Image (cartoon, rainbow, N blue to C red; front, side):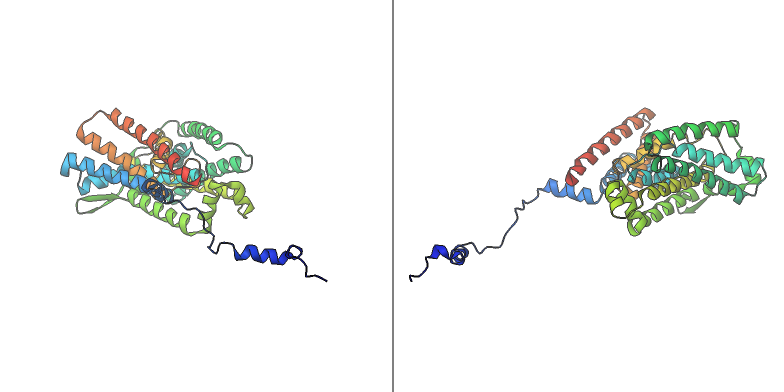
Length: 360
């Protein structure tokens, strides 16, 4: 019988193919990134870089124009004093925006908490520490209601906090009868409420306890957001709540905790507000919600959630403070400050969209 043809032996054909095949290792097509693309990736991984650069440039520009009139220890710490309340409320707003939400009620909650502290301490004769705790309880309850409606009832954060803003604002005026508690009464009967208005001096720099509270709060939240499971879960919920749920994160519980903590921070802001203005006024801090959102947006946090740094928020608040003080010392019309801040907000959102293309 004759030898079978090679065609009838498939393994021989396979060996021929293999012997003539390429021996090079498989490679993936990797295009070298341009300098602009590398910068875009850097900004995506370091969201606080842009506001930090803007802050440094602003200080240098105003310092070169005004000299020691602006670039002094007193002026620098004066900026910190001016943005202390915005920084504290901005911290509350940061937590909410990182979850892809927004809180329009932070300013009203802050003021109501301060009014409750003052009313309890002065008009009801409650010991001051308990009056302060009552103010914190009010902030926590308002935040808890926001969180419950958003997480459990599935209402949009914008609508819920817009409604809460109006409710708390009206409650504030009704409860206080639009009455301001004077600084003299606080100094005589409840000096602890003015704690954050007290200051320490280091050379030419003046640091109020409100500034110190803001710095400590931002530092603590930076650690929590970057080094704890709760912080990682918060970012995960903001980035993709469905994926976070599949990964085992209790999204509803997370949202409720975020809004509740936000309310507590607003109460801290209310206490600091009393120290800042020296009195308890139901009309103070009415624009704190807008100022907090401004600091967050200029600070490079994405309104779509899941990306940003609380340090960026602090830099954003400081940028606003630098512009306000610098333009005031130059002697320009205050409206220029609002115009430039408005341009910064639009530019910050545009930059955020450009950076997000990396992730897309």
